[in-house]
Image (cartoon, rainbow over all chains, first blue to last red; front, side, top):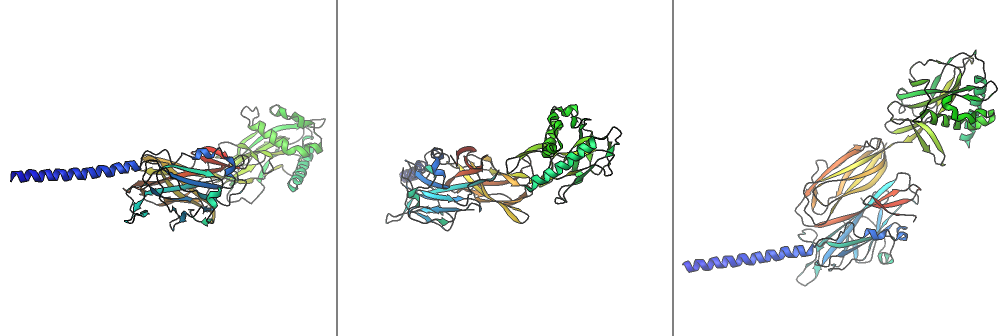
Length: 192
Length: 332
């Protein structure tokens, strides 16, 4: 009897250890996915200031790069502006507009991989600014870790996200890029 | 062109009056100055009872012709030798220069009448050339130099209503009791918009994230039934606490509605009023504030944003700002 009790205690301990090991693994995976950001918010805008001619066409090209230690992630992005200066988007076929105003990148982005550019055009901006005039354009991006069907096909579950990828960098440039305008026409959307 | 012709005609009239008036002998009698607002266009907004008038004696007619300026206005001596025609051409300039002297910090000029209200009776003034300056009773700085669309500058005195700034050009008026008609200074105010600013405060109760979170707000402004503002603003936070965003140069009186349109993937709006409407007041220090509160929603989704701010530059082009610093100029 006593021996049986010892056996059951041992079994419980082993089960607990197993559960703990799984938990640690999950948490570790989480932190692996979210290795310290290099600053997606401010990182690459600085490079734009050295490319003045790219500012001419009021186009903002957004490229999102996944962290080198991250699991593959799905990406979505959108921009907001006031109605005076509406936004249009252009990109290749990998970017698809959603009903919620976001643009969804079709492929999971692997570690150190990047999206193709999503080009946001700011429209109706006059050549000369009225004294004191100002406005803002805000670009938002989100990511979620790729999940997989039994067949191995990757998919994004934006509705019940428990763990998603962190962007290693977001490069944003002003100016049109050929690659960003190649395959799909401008579409309205994304403004406030 | 029309404006210039009118100015020359008025200048000529003043010049003639100056010569006739100031040339009268010492037997001249004192007269009572009348000051009027020469336009009814702003009636209801520009309140005459809110205006104060300062009157300075500038000089008198010299026996041999020309104007002998009082000591405090001695720097205007070159105007004293002008012919009637020349004075007519430059009378606005004379008024501007006289006003600059009168209102200079180190001026030696003393108002003959100070803080006089239009509704109050004035005292008689001895024959001389006078400078009339009007300003708001609640104004801190009486004067300013404004640049017009044609790049010309004018020195004006100012008064404010809730929505507008009224600008008065200095008026020169000769006083002589021998005229049947009492001397009159007619103020012709120009109206200019006043602006204020909006401050959006974001209070984040809990921060549980590994990237900065950006909150986005729509800002729509209506004035007299017309949409005068449509913009977005954003606040980015990387810890619990508060952050601010400002929208400047909003016409005073604008009714602004602010709504949070993106709360970050991990945060919910906990504000008592998710849509807030305020009226913008004039003045840089009179900003109106709306506050929104968010808290973590236990969702582990992460998101962030890039805030691009565009602002007019002095030469009329656009500047692109990030984190409050100019990144590039459009024309560069």
